[in-house]
Length: 140
Image (cartoon, rainbow, N blue to C red; front, side):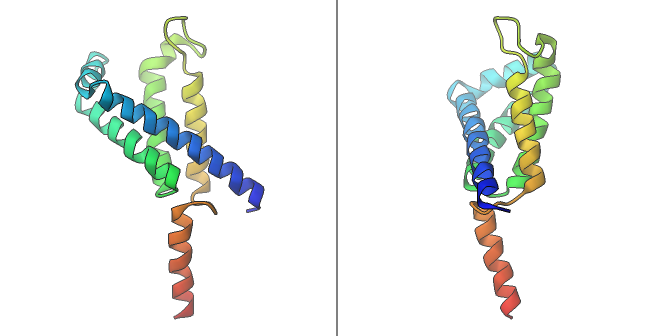
């Protein structure tokens, strides 16, 4: 890949990672038990709130560092699909004035899908780790 594409992928990774990290942090800071209750009110198991919050927090940090980008991006995609279908779809694309629609969720979904398809990039820990590993095996 050329350098401009790599810089673009880095920027997408940073924005996606920071967005999910902040959302995960907010779930814990605001009271994860409240989020679990909210999940239950939508017909989801309460423990799913903990799973989502951990994926958002740890996954956001991993994406920022470029560690496990494909796997975390797939997990983010699943979270966004769930949010769109279960929570936001009824509100419409723009929302209803009191609650935002699913426009941001769609953007985050497609950034996640794009990163899942592209995988490791030049500016990622994945690339540094796996490039060194593959370089070492070639010299053996």
